[in-house]
Image 1 (spheres, rainbow, N blue to C red):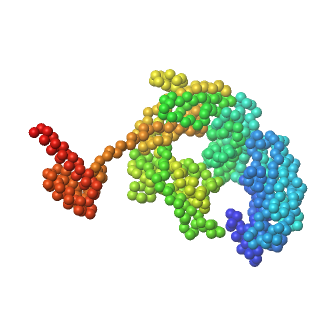
Image 2: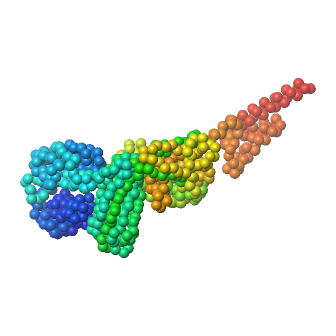
Image 3: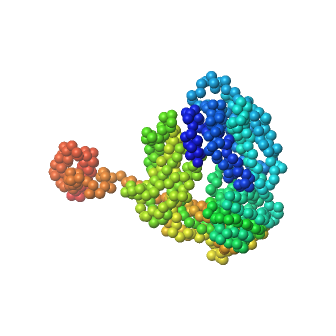
Length: 636
């Protein structure tokens, strides 16, 4: 959108060569109209506001000659990015002293003298935020400037998003607006008032076509799922509503901790929805009308209640040498029905590289400065025993996209005839296909501009996840002896608040796997702690289960010494000359002494003959002949 907007502005300027991208960006941002009536007044959805073409065009005409064309500023806040964002309960309950670094960046055409003499004085302003203390002005030279900001969010209203910006105005052209800004956003989460029955009430919520209701709630300890319930008081026929929740967990992608649900609404009907949460983290909940729905929607008695049954450990890693697995579970802040369900749905087999090749890419794969991009091609082999759905994966690279150290990667699957099957890349869950029985090869391409980085990736392992035709159910028992005596299986029980309980799982029978389980293979599945009381379906909270299948390694065949070379070769692989030569050697070892001498002399004279093989055969024949003569003399 910004590119189209910029093209529209530049098309009307006569001196486009004197306009830099930084100047166009300043014109767009400083002339936008804020939208205060969207998203409860915060800027998480509207940003700078409404873009205005005429005002941005007039801005460039007025200040094009005064703005610095070859300079823009980079802002780094602490160890993170260019802004300040607090949303966790521990972050909003303390005072923060944050270091900000501002550094001018010059274009390549800037003269060295101009860079050395560069000096700008900026006035810092932060309107309507008495909880922020910053210096009144800063003096930025060629080497940059560092200063500190003090933020005290302890007295901010809970349940709301507080957003402001620290603006930097150039005193020489104050009317041009801020040259750079530091966005500061603090979302103070709501807390559950009662620890025994943690629930948050929103009472009455109005959803209009242009309004998005966003709430931040702190998830109590030992809670791993929540239940949203509401009643529709008013809505148009065929109205629809969208629910979205997301949590920010360090070093994890957002898609791993989010939930999305679309409701078809009717007046007077109560709705419930269960969604997973992470304990001791803030969950962001967004309610909005579907874009194609008209009219207003009024929700009443909207509540979010938190529940939890926490396994210890949270990731179950089970080896075949342990026939029984003991799992401890802890109940959350309220009584819950414990009904464990464990199913193994796929098998993951590791793949070792069989070949790799490092080479430069084509002439189009160059950076603007001429730097070459290289590619590493790694080949893997695997065999499918039964038709199944296959999901390849590269654990080193699969969970990273833009934040990856490599320029990119892609893999492709080919059958035994080198026919292309399918390809994929990051986020392997999105790339699955059905493969028939047979042998396949997987070629992985990793791109980078540094050869040394690709050299380190030559031993990268890949995996192939094959879906089982029928999931393997794992039986659970209440105590350890019951798992060996075929006793009554454990079904369910009621756990009281804070209660801990041990449950035992017996090793299942594994048969008819779709792929050979080599060393390091493991069955994948999930453990569900309970079922929803209303819908009787499994809860959305699932815990990963890995059951390692330890297979017996095939014994290596011992090579026996033989005088006959190429003994394992088939007769069809020999030429006619080789067959005649072998037949003469065979006759030499089985005819009389005179005939044997003639054949030996003939074989030795041939250039293509194996002299060592013929001589050894001749010596064995003579030893047998001498033994027979000596034995004959002793007898007679």
